[in-house]
Image (cartoon, rainbow, N blue to C red):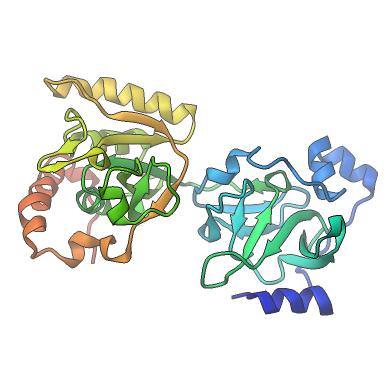
Length: 327
């Protein structure tokens, strides 16, 4: 793992050898890139803060150099910095990025460039999260998202212990995290969320393989394994943090959610009150909330509240269950 001293070493003493080199004339780059891409990557420009939706997208996958398509960063190292530019804690490989001293605008910074084609990417700072402590502040225009069959979905449906336990058992789902979404405070704590003052919902972030299960099927399962007709409540759990909500990431997902809600409505006597909200950010909950049911199956809440929901889920969707229970 790269640390700040490693970055300084490369900036001062030379960068690692790249796996390959790509060199083109200015005219060739201009023919390949859009004017904005050329300005950012070949003329060391900076895009306007908060100008790209890439800042708030955390789908699984990799980000490559827009000039030469060399993989640079993995979404697993992407985080919400609030700066207005996509931020990462590490490059995908030590030799994917090169570093140069930048003394422009009366400042001393470390510039990051693609080590394959010398495209300007952005800068790296030492104010990132642990364990690296680094923040690679990268222009979205300088990158392209590589295609992948993995997607993310974010839902709220009452206590996230229940929702997490259900989706962990769903075929095609590779990871489920419990956390907070839909509020107005960065990195809220559980105590802050339960106060109702932050506006967050208890939510789960689901990583799934779109070739194995569709977004529409995940929506149907979500809407039929909790009660989407009760406002800000699931059973004895009351408060806005327990609201039924679907966070869509684009217009296509919004249309899919509206369609599935209309379809599922016929199964309920009361109106579905599930909220639809554009996804902005997801903050992972404290460690003791993760994988809660699997680690605490003997506790009363798991026995009394979660077990009946799991039994209903298994009865409704037997053909969509994983062959083995989560460990």
